[in-house]
Amino acid sequence: MMTTTPTALANKRLAVLISGGGSNLKAIHHAIENGLLTDAEIVLVVSDKPTAKGLEWAFTQGLKTALISPALCKEAEVSFEAVLLDALLEHQVDVIVLAGFLRIFKAEVLTAFAGKIVNIHPSLLPAYGGKGMYGAFVHEAVLANQEAHTGCTVHLVTADVDEGEVLGQAKVPVLPNDTVETLAQRVLEQEHRLYAEVLQRWLPTI
Ligand code: GAR
Image (cartoon, rainbow, N blue to C red; front, side, top):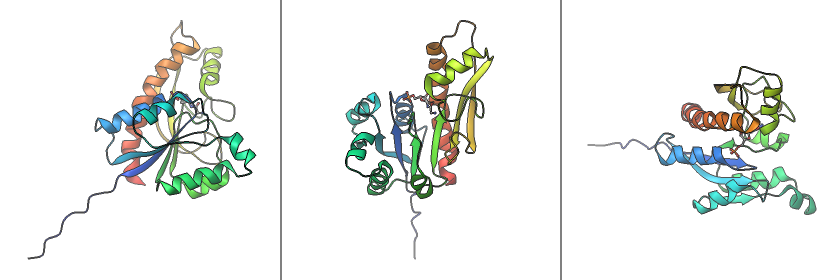
């Protein structure tokens, strides 16, 4: 009698791109380690900044890391995007996960990974999005406008900054005594939960 063995679904191979602390990278890694995010693995962590704390952390976790310095690329007269695409290809990356990565992609990356790049943004997009709106600048603007609520958004990345399809959002109240730091911290807590939740739901669809 012939028997067939079900083929195991291959893990989605994620490249997580960071520019700073990497708390979202840590949250995604933690979600994978704890079985909250399944059928996915981080095969590469890329930073465009040598000072990114998250890169050092990734290295200590045994994750593959790459520092791609825009300044060194310029000096060597190669494009940042070409070096990045080479690294992504070498590690057979399926999906690019932007986690506090502050560089805007040029067309070649967007085309090569169309529909397969996600980002997290610390506001309820379309509010407080677009060029120049990132990190603390977002929370400053929210506080200056005395908003009652803010939050975070996971969305697909397209050529229009922060305008790709929204995959998930979480709302966070703005409290009377909030500072940029306290608000950023409470939004980050929601980002960590939301990113893993959205990836778990979205990855099987691509
Ligand atoms: C996060 O708040 C993320 O939403 C934001 O940078 C922070 C990175 O924190 N991203 C943007 O503003 C992108 N427009 P992390 O390095 O601790 O994950």
